[in-house]
Length: 471
Image 1 (cartoon, rainbow, N blue to C red):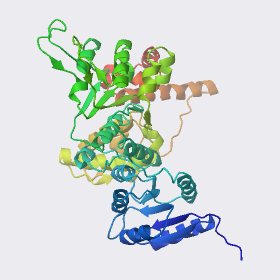
Image 2: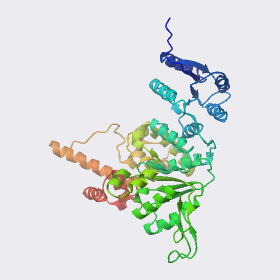
Image 3: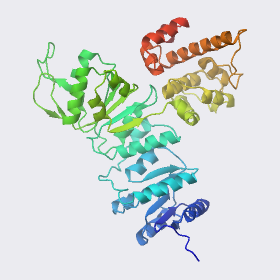
Image 4: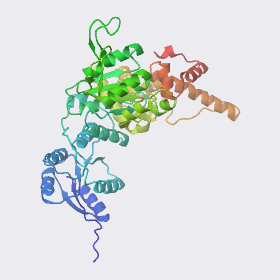
């Protein structure tokens, strides 16, 4: 009888659910792999110690010893078998911790058979290098994570969590560039990297490059010596120095003037700088994390941003998806903010009506997670019963609570008249949504829309909209 095994590799499947173990065995058998199983963490450790394994699939929630504890013991003993962690709860802490402990990848249930096949091949081809993490970054700062939680279980967010976990195992000399629209949570990602990096007792120093006047930003970043300029009566330490071995977070990096871009490039390349008015080099120990909602590659083409600085910052790139591209996370986020503002406002709102949920999930949220949070805060404040109802949300979002599916108004005798009427309604609602989300900030609304400020203002004028009505 012909041997059905096409491969020599042996794979361990660890899960306390017999049905999942059986499903894995069937998939691996069809692919021609040898497989062994374990039902808990202790049994898994025995198999790992006695069998020659090439790959492990392991559930995170196991009896006796958890999957993460097994992974930690493997790391402590120098066992570098590629391990793919499985969980039914795709929360940020689990994904980050798994990647810190050297997991090859991280899967969420329900499991996709094609994904299992793909990861099996990928892990086995890289089995000689996976799992080798040079330094132990298993310390986990729960306080930082609780205060700066990234919420979401969508596939897009799982990829972000894995990147955070991998970045947190790298030395501080590795810079990170975070991109995404306003309100997507770029600072939360920066804080998550900082909070899960070894040495989290060091400061997180953030500065918004667009909020500090250009003539003050240089001294804020680099500090100055006494007498460096008029009014410099004593030495002042800059953000780079105050950060010590922590993190320097440069928000809105795309707004830096060319002269400061050059000085920042030197500080990142040489890992040193001088205070204004000084000539003594000072070492930079912190990690640089920059963030922007601009398209820096377009800014480079327009001559507004240095290409060499972009390449220096872009060693690790994390792109945050807008909320409309992970709409399945909206209910989870909404309930998270509901609990948060129940506590802050001393309310006891239990949830959302079914139609209110429909409104939330169908809205585009141009202001992203920040807009959703502001919306839920106001809705909790206005709620009079145990539920947030559709009429409360409809008033704030200018939608009709009785219409579940969008119905376009036909107002005109000709096609052109009807089309122009709908287009004008769309433009008016689009501009109002942007200004609502960004509190009347025309410049920010234009950037978020991918428009010039002049074109955005023309649309405001056409729609008879004034910025002050949204502040």
